Image (cartoon, rainbow, N blue to C red; front, side, top):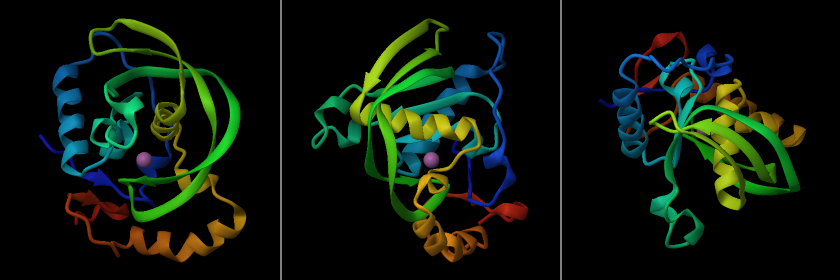
Length: 188
Ligand code: NI
């Protein structure tokens, strides 16, 4: 099932998500649906709050970019109850976008390395140090679990320039090929 994606300005994108329990109902189906939703929208990451669920799950699939970014060749996975333990390395800018913020891309500074603990779909626990492009994607998705969007992290000048564009998005001024939910529950 493909979920509609919540758009900038919707309060659900600003909430803190909770860990889930191991008896969480239909977890496999939810993960499958999150992948399907992400692929339909041609995204490389999708976090549960973007489909209106305030739980600490996100999926990533960087494999479509593997021709240009070989390190992403096997980077298709789900992160459950993820917690970043430490961020390190140089902060560097990289251009980011987000399915909840269509048609806007900005350079965002992030650390190059993270130490993260999470569960996989079989409740195997992982603790890993991840670097580079993967760390970038994870940090973007992880931020969604804490109600943070990439546009929060741009410079004050860029923020001012973005303000009217973001307000436009919240009113539905954009065209995408996936279903969305605007603030005030207007489905587009
Ligand atoms: Ni995003």
